[in-house]
Image (tube, rainbow, N blue to C red; front, side, top):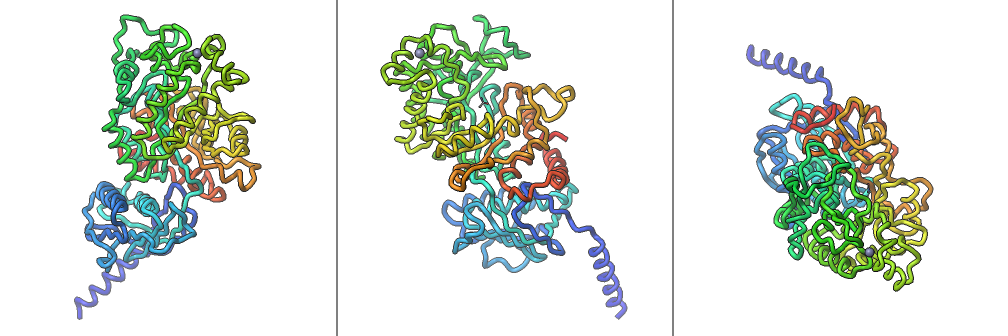
Length: 538
Ligand code: ACM
Ligand code: ZN
């Protein structure tokens, strides 16, 4: 009897302590479509079951990814099972037998109760995103180094606003190794980004193995290493080309698989016809002139480098290269550049002028459209679609490609009205190579200022489009050009926490965006990212 009283007293005390505990904040980024908090918590501990239902065949890649990520995140080895093992203390990831139309292809529902969590989705991608949400709900306990993790009870329904949610990385101006690319992909996945735009070729280095043109990576991937970039000091003949690197096909296949397991498609970019010094340093015969091109060394590219559009061998070169690229990357879109192609050389090149005359083209701008269209048609034969930078857009454009708009919203509207698919990444909000704060106090970056608040203002949907035209807006992305980003640490510093803002801009409903509220949530993410070794700006 006495023992019974003591037990009763202890139970009352513990109830009192529980009811006095502050509820754990829910600090999700991106903000979900609907989140209704309930009282209580589910606790992840060493007895928790991780159960998967209907995830067989290809979908088992997602259960493996969730399992591995769970072990890493919580430093726990879960019991594994399926729905029949779900009795108590379990997290069930279940693919719907019957489509839940409300959540679409990438959405999920999540019910967190005291005894279990149930995540449901129409696709493995949706379950993967549900898992990202569960992880973020544990951030307060992960930050506190708890051994068990309270997930606040809630009912969540969530799905993305845009199908294209991208992040770009320029690996030409500075090279980033496979280990970092995977780390980058992990980061994107945790913020429900589903496209990685891999800028693989530019003036400063060619970064992809092409079997038919081995010299591209023997010569074009390397340049002299300078302690500081200096545009006024071109490459000297005696300077050894020691800086650079490239990805082998084996490495690329490995990265494509790694990204696919995290529901990220990779869009490779092969720049046409400008930004080509690395090609011309390797194959000078593809230029209009006999200028001694080198792989570029300064932060600003030599604008006159352009491939000769009057030379049939140039077309053959690009088609051969793209045949190999198309084979490596399963995603249907390939980016073929088209930006900042200064055509001064074309204006005085007899071959280019002959092409203009032969094809009955109006001028050099039309010549670029023609060239890009030839490549686009070749991609079509390979079952691929082209993406081009918005420099190609005009009222009378012939290209059917998807357009990536960096120069502003107006050009995006023109492209959408023209019937082209559109991805927005305007310099005004999405160039994360620009300064984040006062340049006086920040490490050297590209001129321009995009604060976290400015990044958060990004709305990928332009005003004033019809419903039909709005369907052409696939989504948005941020760009990380690496002229002034020469280490993984610096890449992370420029990306974080602005990636958090971007993810909310492309995922969350427009009417749920609230910078003040976001700022509170992002502070947990800054702490979490820093604690996990990411160089996140405070
Ligand atoms: C670009 O920034 N030139 C696409
Ligand atoms: Zn030419």
